[in-house]
Every structure is written in structure tokens, then in C-alpha cells.
Amino acid sequence: MARSLFGRRGAERPGGQEPEYWLSYSDLMAGLLMAFALTLMVALHQEGRRECQLVVYEATADTMKKLLDTRHRVIRELQARFDAGDRVEVDSTGTVRFAGSLLFDQASAEVSADGRVELATFARDYFPLLLDDAVFRSQLKRIVVEGHTNDDGSYELNLALSHNRSLAVMEVLLDEAQGYRDDLERFVTANGRSFADLVRLPDGSVDKAGSRRIEIQFQMDDRTLAQRVLELGAILVDPECDQ
Image 1 (cartoon, rainbow, N blue to C red):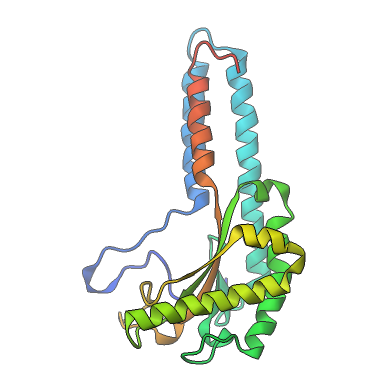
Image 2: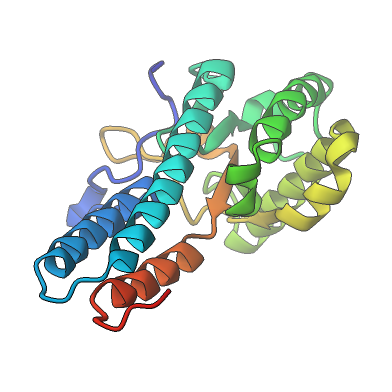
């Protein structure tokens, strides 16, 4: 993947602070699948194992595998289509980052003409990729447009600026994806983060340009899946399984 100018999540922070780690959805599901497999092994070695236990496991494992495979495919396609180094970056979680200078003039919350063209092209490819796949769509929770600034000025001023920028980007995306308008009104939300998540250079100083960015990320309904795995785990070890 192209070299990122936006920094890395999970990198060691300056001043001896603990590094920040983000558990990706795929990591969470991989862990759950491992726990699920171990539960199956226990169930298979219990006396009186019922055929329904194996059926439940196979059906659920197949569904989760399809979902993970679809998610990985979506991320690979996002990276292939949009990753452009210093202008647009797609990380391993599927988060798309637009450099602030690509979309906005300094201190402005109005999307530039070039930025509007960039977002229009993005919208035409991004939303069909996420919403046209029935398996992926069934577990999609939300699409978040998130604005970030550098630390020039007060937190409150930058909070308003970052929020207004995320709203401006969302409005362009809604305009440029008319065929998905109803879906976007259900899934898309906009947030401003001010300078709460600054990007830092290797020497620990603030990367002023890199911190000015818009992030667009999808979130999956992982809690529903986790609950389903726990329920199925209980079925697997239940000697009276009759599902």
C-alpha cells in the first residue's frame, strides 16, 4: 500500500504515553470464531452429543465466514479503488481518509470545487460497494463521516469547524448518490472531533497538514454477531439441544 502521510493508529505516542490500539472487526470475529471452534471441540467429545449441535455450528460458522470474506473483499476493493497516497488513504479497517487540503481551504468549511469532484467520484463507487451486497448490508450498522483538525486555535473553534466540515462532506455525498438516498439517511452520520486525534510526526511534533483530514468509515453490527455466537455456544454444550 502507498506510504501514508496520515500516521498510524497504534503507534507509540510521545512523552511515554501508552500506545493506542484499535481492535478491528475482523480481529474480533476471528477471536469469536476461535472460541466457537473450541466450544465445538468440547461439545464433540461429550457423551450424548446430538446431531443438532453439529448442524448449528456448521450453519453459523459458514454464515460468519461468508461475512468475513465479504468484508475483506470490500476492504481490498476500497484500497484498490481509492488509495492514492498523500491525497486519499484506505487503511486495513476500511477507513478512507481524505487529506483536508484536498477538500477544504484553510479555516473553511465549504467544500472546494476540486473536493466536490473528488467526493462525487468517491460516492459513485463507495456506496454501491457497501450497499449492493446483501450479506454485507445485513450487518452494516452505520457509515460515519468524521472531521479532524490540527491544534491551531481553541478546541471549541476546531470542534465547530470539524463538525461543519463533516456535515458539508455528508451533504455532497447525499447529493451525489441519489439512488441510495434512503439508505444513506438510514446509515450515514457526521461527527466533528476537533484536534482530539492529532497525527504526529516521528519526532513527536504535530503533523499540521496530516491532522487536517476527513475520515469515512463503516461500522458493522458486531455486538449482534457476538451475542449470536454466545447463544449458539450455549446450544452446542446443551445436551438437550433441540434447535
